[in-house]
Image 1 (cartoon, rainbow, N blue to C red):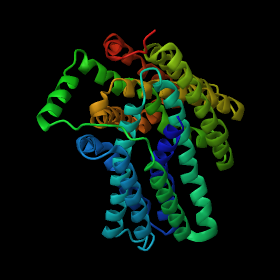
Image 2 (cartoon, helix red, strand yellow):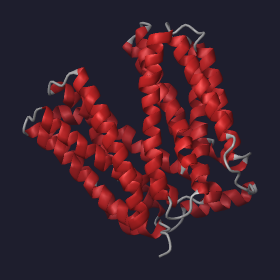
Image 3 (cartoon, rainbow, N blue to C red):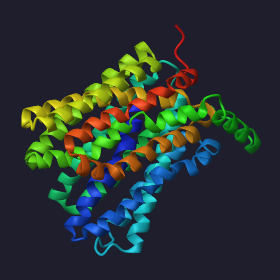
Image 4 (cartoon, helix red, strand yellow):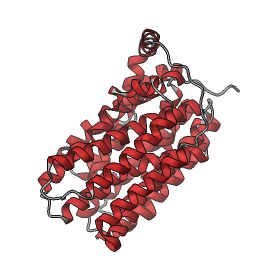
Length: 387
């Protein structure tokens, strides 16, 4: 579990750097909002990583992929800090794209290594720790590195990030080695074909597409709702950290332990319903025009139940992957999940604008229910721990 924490800290740090640090870096240097928006296209490798995941399955050791990716990311940051931030030139975009391709490749190897390391019954606790470590990494990227930039300039911040990535590479090279025998291409393809054509495969993929759609539909509209209800930037920072982060971490840890105790299937069933119902807290706060206490309460409940649901859902994704093809299968399943978030997030603003916050938040609660139609097939895929 200590290795799980370190692995997912390493996974969260690059994502937090791209999502939280780079937009600030560009805006401080006068880059237009339009160009900052276009620069977000460098995150595409995280959505497309399933395309090269078979290479990670078939070539080399997982820990070599992880350490190598971290070194490439560190080198990319050292190059990027010497390039002008504005205007955003092609060479800077290519350098940052190298960073995100390496980060996505690291994610493939980390997820596969973790699946190989765990046995049925351990996924719950492991994913509780995983979510917590990932969130800590986001704080280090989004808060600590920005603080470093304030004291030592952007060169100091980029250098600190690069140094931390190199330290992580050195530490993760010491991961316990897993004996693996790569299959021939024909055998690998037969195994993958058998997995995607298992009875109920289509239903399981649809379940993955829909399970957290209520959360992903509401998420993009929560912060605009806070702003429109008069919360200051200080209030928003307080909700995001003290309430949002703390409640999510506690929810993930509790959800992880309970998932290991009651089983993945029951955890999906119960925590998914709690996750859906919690959206009604925001709907109630919007309908009643609640002040800060009401919004804080809605945030606390939604973040806690979101942590519960995330721990159960990630445990399910790991549980249904075969260890010998973990890199490819997990990358494919996470791509299916991310697809729903991208599509629903794109129309969330239109929904909130047309319906209003309260009806839209209530609708997001109902969006979680169709996933339950596929639970019978999901149950057949889960390998529960023997009694």
